[in-house]
Image (cartoon, rainbow, N blue to C red; front, side, top):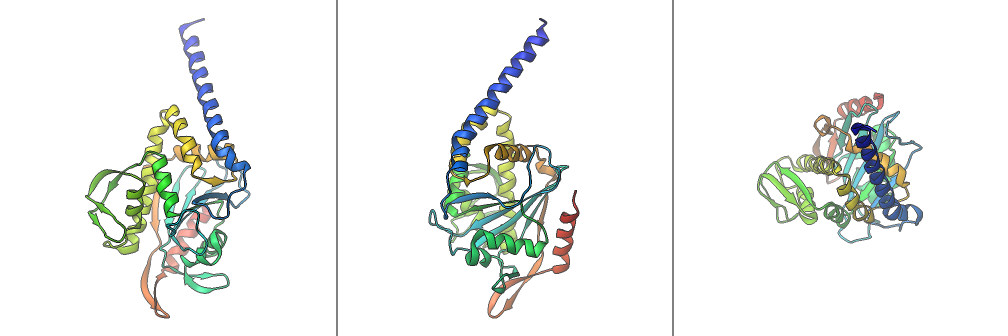
Length: 303
């Protein structure tokens, strides 16, 4: 046998060991939640709502709706609003788009007339929130991820905190945000205060930009970690322990593989345009219909 053949066999053994460890971690942590019935109210829920078959190579656009619920109490989402509405669409060519909808956006909610989109979750939970977004956009959502404040905090802590660039000085007594401009490392509580601060220039649009900053920071950090498969295996049980899902471990693995191969520098970031106005005594955002229809039509036409 030549030197190169021995090296190839050695690499193959290491690869198979890594795959085995990943499978064990997924079965031991994620598999438990796949087999057990999730509680009705949990801190982080990841659910499939379409018939998409996710493989490492997509054959159609994949859409995930991210919903951040304004509950400080662990295990309670019923009756609470979703302050974060972000659609993530990944096309088969890996072109990715994030679309944020301001929480005060005035939209039709089935059975409730026109209301702020944040109220959809309070009226009917994730199902009505997803239906409301689908009716607004004309797009089919494949998965949704719901997180409460404690759920988000625990997720960030489970990955060892988050390295992020803070794009402005932030000091807000309401959210607890207190950051200098520049690179910093956030623990779970700090990341939550960064996400919640809306007393900024640009108000909720700036906060929406920060939400997307957090998503990109997580992606970049975990892509760096993925270069060390053993490091990935070490965090999987802690990460999956914080997520309630019935999605099969193999499907979760394929989703993770897709996300970890995205080019973070080529992700398009969109924030639906609109203007604040007063309707029936409430401050709401009147969305620019022409703009959001153009955005959603473009996503719908993607192959």
